[in-house]
Amino acid sequence: MSTQTQASDRKALTIGAVAKILGQEFDDVSISKIRYLEDQKLLSPRRTPGGYRLYSQNDVERLRTILRLQRDEFLPLRVIRQELAAGSERDELKARSAGARRAVSVETAASPKLTIDELVDDTGAPASLIGELEDYGIVQPEGPMGQKLYGDTDREIVQAAAELARYGVQGRNLKVFRTSADREAALLEQVLGPSLASSNQVTRRDAIENLETLAAACGNLKHLMLIRDLRRLTGE
Amino acid sequence: MSTQTQASDRKALTIGAVAKILGQEFDDVSISKIRYLEDQKLLSPRRTPGGYRLYSQNDVERLRTILRLQRDEFLPLRVIRQELAAGSERDELKARSAGARRAVSVETAASPKLTIDELVDDTGAPASLIGELEDYGIVQPEGPMGQKLYGDTDREIVQAAAELARYGVQGRNLKVFRTSADREAALLEQVLGPSLASSNQVTRRDAIENLETLAAACGNLKHLMLIRDLRRLTGE
DNA sequence: GCAAACCCTCAAGCCCGGGTAGAGCCTGGC
DNA sequence: GCCAGGCTCTACCCGGGCTTGAGGGTTTGC
Image 1: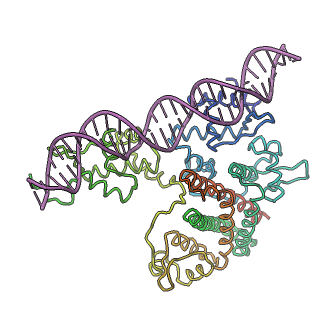
Image 2: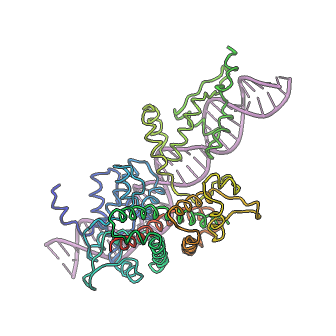
Image 3: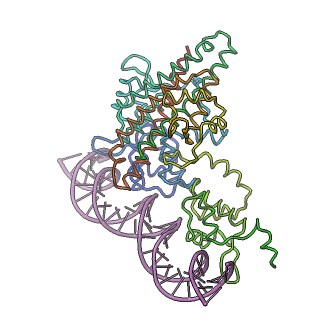
């Protein structure tokens, strides 16, 4: 295969094309299987007005991950679904290489900014969803209208939101996350604010590190409390 | 000779006894399943002259491994058989990765209840902190005052809170987590409520699974948003 | 503007892994 | 010598993971 096909497939692919591509790496893909996986909520490609599925680069990547987990790790779809929902695609690589534990860096890694078209292409989320997310301040692109640019975190957020949308969670429902994140940030700022503002580089570094630790602990706490709430929900 | 009856600690067990023992740890063992595994060549216990199976300590261990690989790593028997045949050298690897996967379960795992004294002992958190957490509804012991009992989740919550306390986060600060967890639970209930309430067992099961997936996705989203907030905090 | 290639949904069915059920008979420990 | 607990074997079940086919719409290239 010549590589110029790569260059052209920035754009979305039809299901047949996807099957052909992945067929090189996995011998048990088929169009019907891909559809089946979608049925099982592992995937949700955009559609053309006529109803054809359109797979973004990202969708293809995701599909590749699914097939790999299935073939090499023997995971049942049910579990793969959860792993994906938990956004472990990145973790996967990290865990493999370093065995890092929830290494959550607050440090900014300057990443390429995306236009909205690229974002749509990349995540497979409909532009309408992205607009909604902006309205609620959940993604925050920079730049003037019509020239907005989205960062890497925005991309991931959109991805997560698309995941939730699959289950019927609307954009406006996500407001609650916005406010709770704000509050949490405020809390952490209050606790660590002084040292963060410090002009002493060493103090500042320490503060950032603490921030990460604290964020992790908070995450844990929230998770636990949620779990308990949910148990009550299912329990009775 | 009769000497083997003397060495009581390495006495061989009958299939019923084995099933009972492993039943503590794995809820899906049964006599027939153990026989089935033998049929699949995963095991070959000694036999009495009369044909009864006799399980050595070692057999039991092996069985435990099999069940663990099945439950926690989702490996098919075919693969487990190979792994076992390939020797125990790589067992460590598996044991390590085992902890990583265990999906987040909302399912209640009946766990021992603790008194407040045990809780203090266990977590090293001061009783005052625990009291504070109760005031804000962050831990929710059962039972009458003076006789309160704390569950496993409570224990973990206290632990996390103690961690935060180390950094100067007070109990009352944690209220925000309480409310945000509540809201999130409400959101999920709204989305999945109908199917959760269903009397149809299958629908319910599915709903619980979706709940777990959704919770994971929400966790991811919250995490991402917080990270972005924190970047802003440190960035400028 | 049309054919050929491609894709859509939905319902039904298939296959396989991983067991369970039960009939009929045997063992071994008190 | 009683009987709880085992034994084998065959048949059956169930859920996960697709495939097939009918009936029909969409795209694309010429």
